[in-house]
Image (cartoon, rainbow, N blue to C red; front, side, top):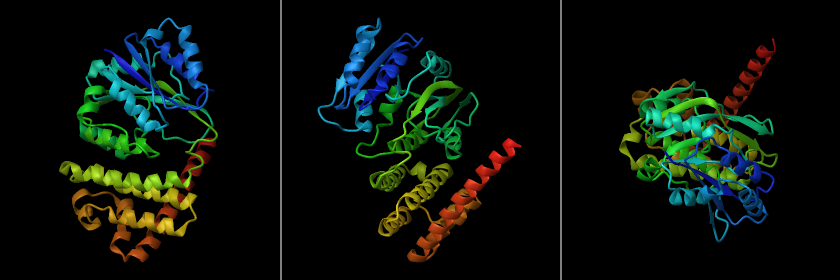
Length: 345
């Protein structure tokens, strides 16, 4: 079974050698490595070519080049379209792999014949919190299991470190939305909605490097605007498929994401007009009323209280939603602090 590792390259001269060598050193032999030069302005590609000159496996590497910088989503899409592997694997060029990464994931894919396999990861660089994998090694035997686990944050949104069947990607039109940031949130949502069978490998198959200047730490206004756009894309996607509109996990994911995104908007932006415009968009993009959702989906107490804002006049709803999101964030911080304190005890 051939695996295509897709590596977008842009401004990663400090990391590309480590990344590429880790892909070339994989114990899985039937590999294709696709480097997508997204018109990088530095010497990343020169370093990559130097690595290939001394590698006995350079024949498995294909280099593709964009004529202009188009972003991470476009680079991944270019790799998907050119890949010849049975499965695809996304590796960011500032990250790297343990030598048996693809072997662990590919063995699981073959053994269980799944749409995708997800592995665990370790963090290098900044010690910032990132969403953990909360599943043991296990089979998610149907879409219900996959969506349920995803709606409970048991597997992470990042596209990397997921081995995905290429025919499934093509059949589901599972490409990355170009021109936005945080595209993984949208892509993983669609993956969870469409995958019929998955497997989790709870072993480290990826080393994730968090850079000090990462957009995760210092979101710009554009990143916040993209969050609003993503909610719109999700709303359109859900409305394309009637079965998704009837699924309680999809409803919980969609509505919970609005609150999560609004929390970030409140925290990082002091622009009151933007805050209100974002709220108005989130409120408008509703495909089922809170009352009907309560009766049909049983979404839980927290989400029911959260969505009271939709039953109020718009300006009062805005005030309520802000207060709810703020209090929820503070309670989350308190719970984390308590866990840390009890752990030290």
